[in-house]
Image 1 (cartoon, rainbow, N blue to C red):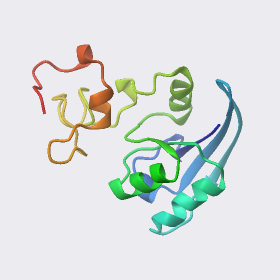
Image 2: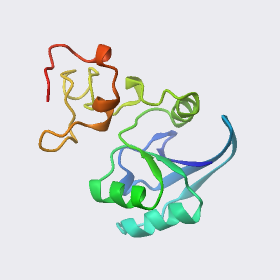
Image 3: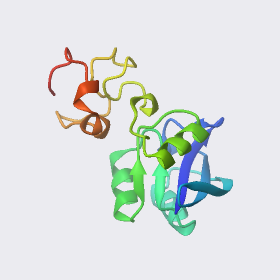
Image 4: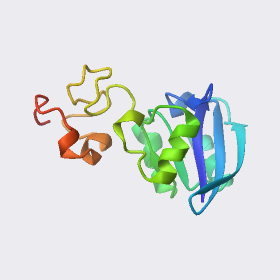
Length: 151
């Protein structure tokens, strides 16, 4: 399996759409193997970025925020996407391989019941018209803020 993580200064880049660097990791079983950092194609051509990831054999992308159109392009191309992730690139990779990337410590501020951007109210900045954010739907109900209410 080949994993791609958009990175900036060793951390997950906050926005895929403008990220300049991606780290590719080849994984055998649950062990990371060969790693390489590459520059993403410059400019705003999202089709070009998706094609680049496909050319490199990407199976899974871990990134920060990503626009909904690009997210649809990635998933339609067969790339699994873990969006709205934050943290150190190595820690995020380890969490994915251990199966706990959905832990709230790796969510971007303002995404799901943490005490981040939205003050821990369980709301998500990227949610649209009442739809639940992926992090909120994946969250264990016991982790949710009881005062946040339903969406």
